[in-house]
Amino acid sequence: MSPIEHVWDVIGRRLARDPRPVASADELWVDLFCCIVGDLLLYPYFVVKSNVTYNEKEENGMKEVLDRDIRR
Image (cartoon, rainbow, N blue to C red; front, side, top):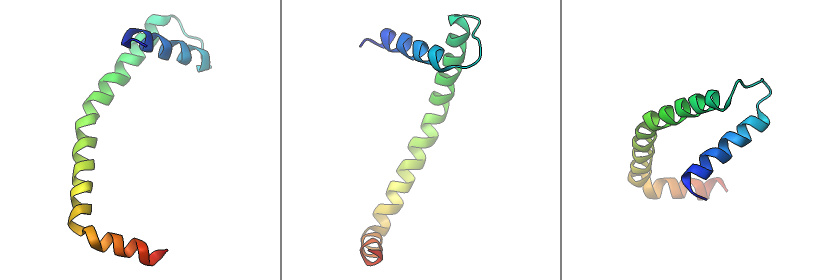
């Protein structure tokens, strides 16, 4: 599926599940655009956060593995 087809598919699914009456597909485009922009703005935060968590796990490495095995 091409990216454009995917976007239209998402809009179609949102129209089908949205209980409130929608004025037009333009309204959904605006909502979708805001969601995409919000996701793109937050994405670097989650990448940094996941890398920090991963590095902390690597530093604790063996301790975490041993703790997990002991709890079982």
